[in-house]
Image (cartoon, rainbow over all chains, first blue to last red; front, side):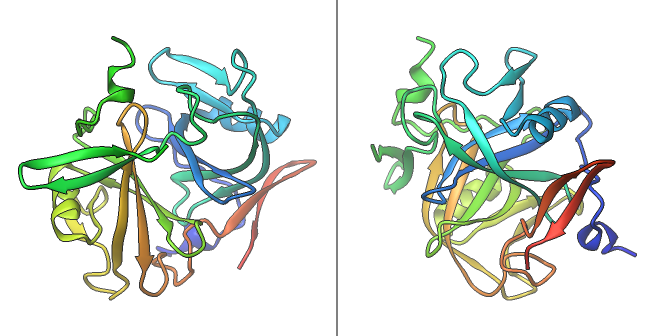
Length: 124
Length: 124
């Protein structure tokens, strides 16, 4: 069955060739997309076990508890997988800003199309 | 400057080694995360140029206008990049369901931790 993965109640996350799965954190209160990061199997399991968001830092090559140094932790109130189980959503209670720049969300710039190419406009 | 990418108003999307960038579509009306997919440079440019969501299908290995066959198109009302420009958010007006299973969002199952492992619970 091609739709087995979509209809199963078994958790079968599909990690990529690099061992990672993409993870989107959304804000429980506003519903807004806060950030997109990556998890390896251990980060996903730690998130399930602890109820706090753990990721894999591709730049630092290490497991990372969100907010471990900044204090801007994420309490996970729901963890969802998508239809083909190659992406997860963390609905979180975000303590402080989600973005390392101090902004609430990492998605604070909008693309505007101009006559000579595209520019970014800051929203906050 | 290490923070240049975070504060620039130049669009400089960072595509991965596979030439792709992750793209999250969120619903304009509800704010909810609808789906996560991938774009290559051409898909991103077509999305900017047309105001409709274009992606790169990793499974089919082809450019893909969302809804081209299903009719479930996405009108892009805002296109955002994240702090380090390796992810984009499309705020969309979704025609019909976003998910190919017919559900509004691809994230319709929640992970529940049990005594002998995790299970998925259907939300809709």
